[in-house]
Structures are given as C-alpha cells and as structure tokens.
Length: 194
Image (tube, rainbow, N blue to C red; front, side, top):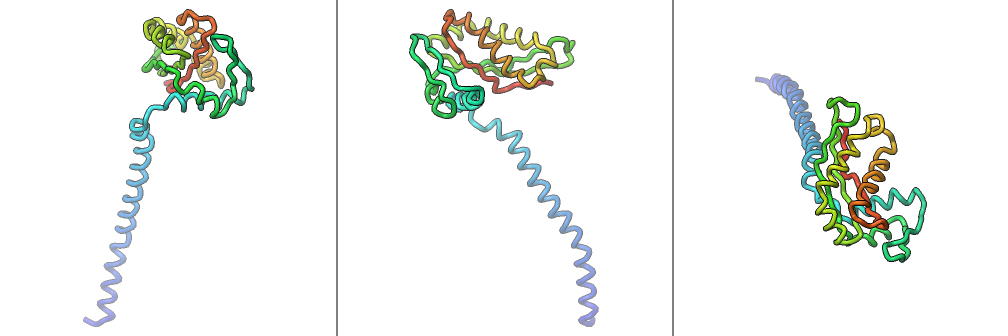
C-alpha cells in the first residue's frame, strides 16, 4: 500500500474515534461535576461538625448589630455590653446550649398537607438554668410545637417569620426558668417548610 493510502485510512479511523473521545471526556467532566455537587450538598453537611456556641453567638450578634447597640442588665444588675460583631460572641462562649431537634408540625390552616420541620437551640446564662430547662424539656417541646403549629403558612413565609418565632419561643422559655430577668437566646439552625 502506498503512503498516501495509509494516511487516508489513518485519517478515516481518527475521524471515527474523535466523537467517541469527546463523549468520553464529556462523561468524565459531567461525573466530576455531579460528584462534587453531591459531596457539597449531601455529604458535606453530614460530615461537617455542628456549630459551636461561639459560632452561633457570632451569627446572632452579627444579625443583631444592624438593629442597633444597646446595653442590657444582667441578673445581678451589672451592665452587659452589646458590642456587636465578634467581641460579644466571646462573652457567651462558655454558656450552656440546649437543643431541641426534629420538631415537626402542621401549620395552622394547612389541613395536614404541609409541614414545618425545625430545630431550636437555646443559649442560657447558667448551667443551673440549663439543668432546670432539661427537667422541663417535655413542656418546652410542647410549647414550641404549639407556637409553630399556631402560625399559618402566610405567617411562616413572611420575611420576619424567624424573628417572630425566636421572640415567641424566648417568651415561652422565661416562665419555665422561674426567673424574670433571664434572657435566653434562641436560634433556629434548621427551619424547613414543605
């Protein structure tokens, strides 16, 4: 066979494998993208450590710094500074946190067709308050699910719904602590409406 004929045959074979290589490269790239997305959104949250009290306090203080800076009185009358930012987070770093997981309720007026799934984290001022609240956990869970179940879907979708819930839950906690000056901090680390 001549050199020209061999070059023509090689070119024809190369043209046949070209589209196969493109499909193979596309499949590999697609697999990497899907694998990365699955790792970030499915495995990542499960493997990541739970947020610490410092991180939760920093997130809460960061949101609160836009509302203004006010001083508040502690239990014994000493002035606590609401500095905002990361400085205030260190103040509550050793404070006990109680967490209520897997709270699932049907919103008011949903006729059981929709549900809310939430977790509530409560930062307390002392270990004694945490122990007292732990003893009253059943009352607390019932109260929180009652608050969640009393709101309609329209209220839950409102822009200030999380703030409203935090305020209502904090007001629910105060009587359980038997201390009028107690100021529990409430977070909603998980809040899903389906």
